[in-house]
Length: 154
Image 1 (cartoon, rainbow, N blue to C red):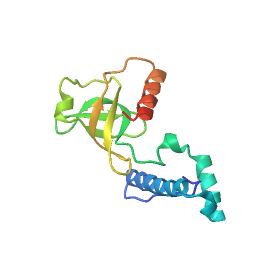
Image 2: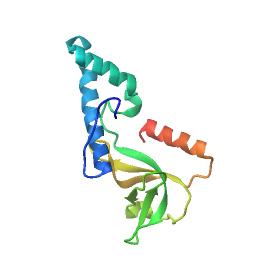
Image 3: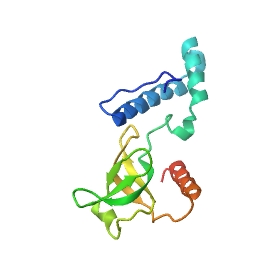
Image 4: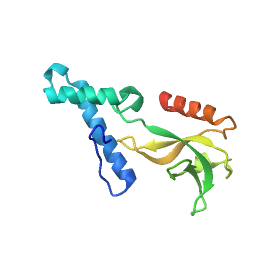
């Protein structure tokens, strides 16, 4: 986040993003809990900058990491022959579908919303914890449903 002068390092882009989220969560958590009058002028400025740039409730950076994260993707067969969920869009992420969740699923190109377990930092690590039925509405309806899922945290 160049404007906020936050960064994260990692051996892969995903690890760097995880480090960035951890750094942002730590700093925002500290600044939100601190009384503004107890902060130095630099810290007060930083708090104002962060809170003006980040929608803390929507980002969930100010609280505990969510237990799962929702994606849009489709059911695919993995190299091991098992079923996996593959995300759509710029990031090509694959998450294993446990055997109890894979029953009755078929490989197809229909989009589905699916949730994966996150680690203590809120980074999606899998496996798949929930899978919706194939979605047949408009793209706008699909994104509305995704936003509701993320907001509800279910």
